[in-house]
Figure 1 (cartoon, rainbow, N blue to C red):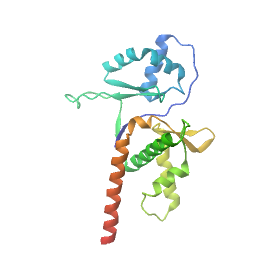
Figure 2: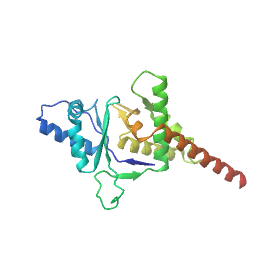
Figure 3: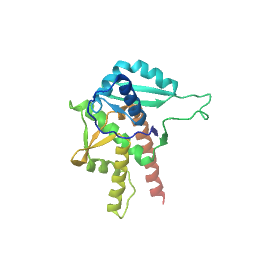
Figure 4: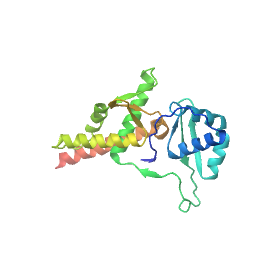
Length: 211
């Protein structure tokens, strides 16, 4: 599984900017990572008003704007060019996710889908211990549980740095799942990854029985 590299952004307050300065701020924020309605309201309002001109500009540098007004996020993706893919410089970097990163992201996406179908609250908050429990079920047996928890915490920190979860202020063991995750992992990908997990661990069980 691959994903576009993003960096979590902090909230800001509305300021009195000229249209040109506001346009520049919107573009810079989008280049650095997702733009959220809740965090950057003055940028969000400008983007909604001027999204056609913003899209036109971004297309000239090989980028596409993905905006979900109902969920309150916008981000950029690199346009695909099959003819000269290898020669075109990329403004956005893409990375191959590790198995553990994919596992946690899929688990978070699945939990978000369950939350949306069962609860009315818009925000999904997950506990650090909850995420650790998801991971331990697929981790190899280890003798050093302290090290394993440190590894899990490093993974959780990495997913937060990617911008998919955000630690709550003054509550470092509680995280809000960012709804932008829905744009990166579909319901079909959840099913495909679960099937991959099932085949992987069935094979592991068979190999253990044969030894």
